[in-house]
Length: 143
Image (cartoon, rainbow, N blue to C red; front, side, top):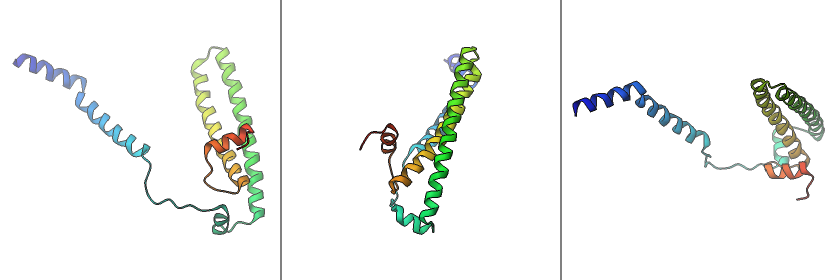
């Protein structure tokens, strides 16, 4: 039995099972902390309260609406350009650069979503809107 134990110990050290277990444990702790939702007291603030807290006038809000509309259009245009370029790369069988375009496309679309969502909240004049409310607005459906 001494030979089997020594072979088992040698395999464990060669494969680095202790390090793999330690890394898996730390990754699960990190994932648990990142994916958990804090249960603290939730402060709800109305749109008008936020305007008064930030000392913003209606003219400021209208100016920001125009800025978000322009930025959203720019980001959407960039997303279309990157999307078309990605298909060009796929047609040319350049798969790795096309994969990089997918990452760039996700970044540009997330920037578009941010501007569009903020604009949606300003138009609705309320904070705490949901993704599905924004999506129904984009799709043109009545809630």
